[in-house]
Structures are given as structure tokens and as C-alpha cells.
Length: 114
Length: 112
Image 1: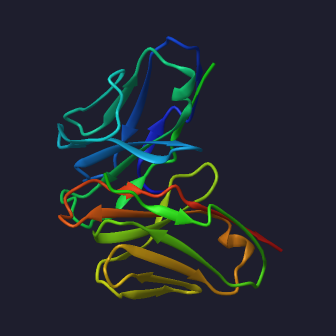
Image 2: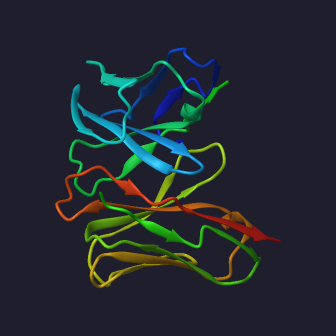
């Protein structure tokens, strides 16, 4: 158990819909990261938050957005869903300094768009 | 954009065999990490290497960081079925201040 909690674990939804994925980081971790994992693209960095503020942005689509709340939990919002958005979405967290620190991954949220 | 190329993409071996998987890039990394991911779980960190030429051992696993800090290898001695999983390498650029970039992984299957 990494200490990072993600909900829901599985989600099936239709194209055009919107979903919200939730992440609770490890106790004391200020940084939260979102990654998307698909068979053809591997693990792709989407976005990072640090203590409530956006710190870095990767290959995140405009249809996707995220935020980190004062209690440090984070949500990833996916809208106007397409079939290609079907993937495993991971949240990870780390200690305050990004440099060389270990990041801990949750078990992921498996999204299937039909 | 930094890219990490992992090879082979798939590897199926018999229990007791040795294997090496590779992680290559044209970019220099301040540090490189290896993760193992099992089905239904998130990646779990195995090791971090930060110095060019560094070698680290974790039981039957040996990790090496290239002298130029552009590549790394993972060698497993006497593979066991429990070694089965997806092995991912991940690196941060020379500044050390960017999020981890992951390779696509090597999917290892060790058959008893």
C-alpha cells in the first residue's frame, strides 16, 4: 500500500460524458501528479500540483482539467470523453521537493469510454 | 521533449535464466529510476541512480547508469516467476526540476 488513494477504481461511461477522478495523497506529501497510461503511449505525465497550485503541465488535453484543494486532495476532470480517453489514470504524490524524490503511485482509476 | 526508449518491449523467459533490459535516450538525465508495475497496481520504485557509471544491486537485480547519464540497464540473475511484471525506467532532465518522464516499459514474463 503506497498510501495514495484513488477513487473510483473502475469507471465505464459513454462518449461525450464528463467524469471526475479523485486522489488523496500520502500524509504530508504536498505534490500531486496525474499520469495517463495506455498500451500504445505508455505512462504519460499530465499535470502536477504543489500545495494547491499548478506546478507543471504535460500532455494534458484542453478537455481535461485538474485542481488540488486546501486539504491537498486532488481531482482530475475529464470532459467530452472520447473512446481514445479509455486508459488507466494514476495519481502520485511526493514530498515537498521534486528533485530526486521518490514519487508514490496510487492503484489507478481504470476508465473505459464506450 | 525527452524520450526514453526501452528494449525489448516484451520478454518471455524460463525460470532460472538471466536477462537484461535497456533504457536509452539521447538526453542527459540528472537521475534515472526503475519501477516495476504489476497488474492492477501502480508502479513501485525499485531504485534511483544519480551518478554516471553507478551500479546498484537489489538482491538478484543489478542496475547500472551509463557514464554519460543517457542510458541505463537492469540485469536480473536467475529470474523467478515473481519477477514477472512491467519494468519502467523514468528520468528527470539535467536540471532535476521537471516531472518524471517514463519509458513505455519492458513486459517480462518468467515461466516456471
